[in-house]
Image 1 (cartoon, rainbow, N blue to C red):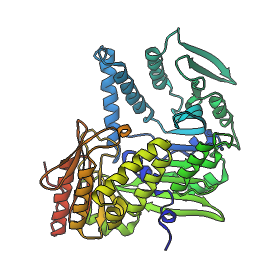
Image 2 (cartoon, rainbow, N blue to C red; image 1 turned 180 degrees about the vertical axis):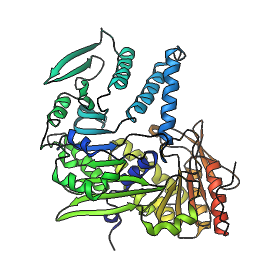
Image 3 (spheres, helix red, strand yellow; image 1 turned 135 degrees about the vertical axis):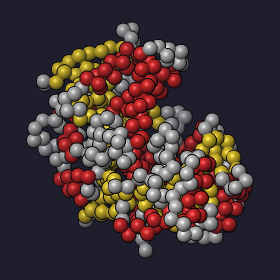
Image 4 (cartoon, one colour; image 1 turned 90 degrees about the vertical axis):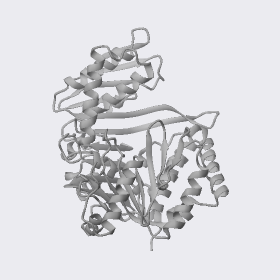
Length: 487
């Protein structure tokens, strides 16, 4: 039997890929986007264009509507009284909505940090790019850029420089309020619109845009083969990682942190990995290809036809998207937690570990040993009931219980009762426990929520969503072929 990490092979990231595909839409990721990415990129994620009427496109439809309303409110002056921070977040929100209208790729080329006296890493260099396939229709993107320039720049602090790189007109922005490395550049590149950050990043994209370029990611033999094996031609989301492509002349503790995070994700050497996900009807399909010494390893993470009996018993017919992920809950938790901690500062990592160690000692309950080890895969995710705002990740997650449900319920109750206060740097939250056993958080909004039933641990975005799924599972267990209770 293989070890959990070997079986997992980066499935914590795969779960994020699955999640993205549940919000994505029908068109596949165009492979030609990879022809615009330098072959030595460290990481890149590809997303297809959104279609609001497609089975999984309701999240993007909600984003578009909210973006439209925000723009109209701004034009008539309704947002003039907002604080600067609130306006900034609103602009980020509407800008993301604009980007999602196009097939696009976000690529990381390089980053550099310096270790501060407080033990935290300070970013001192970055090269990255956003490349959108606009098919030459750049007007909407340029209108958004012009709005951001008008809102956040001024002649005293900002310098806007137009220049030509070959036949491409490029604009670059520097601002004295930002670090020296924060140079933003943008411009149309035929059927694409490119925005970059970092000195020389735009030139790197230009270099891969020449016809028959043999240096791009799309021309890379391994990537092309992995993309084909992973069903990239039908995927709506793809994630590529090559951590060894980071330069080795960086600060030593960051190098150690990067390699630690890579090991936590199953990338233990000079490997590269590609995850893809798409949707066929209601079913989310996900595949990974990981480079290993002596060959590649392909794994089907979600979308196995053998899961249909399970789906019929736990997924409501009203759900428009669902995924059955081949992973053990304990392995997913361990991998995600290890990767998260590896990316934190030493001070923050010690504080978090001390907090949960104290909770375990106080309650006598270990999350991994006493809770997660009593659950078994696969993990089921679906989108019924749907969140009113169609927020990403606001779905229902089902974890099957293999141990005694009453014992697990008592352990969860003890654990959460002691975890009412989080570490200071993680923010505070308030936990509530209703008489029917539902736990939920309150951050102003109510949720997410959790309930331990006789066969499943249900996690969803609100107490009501948890209860609706509880009632559905109970009805199915009694042999009633009904969906969720109607409103």
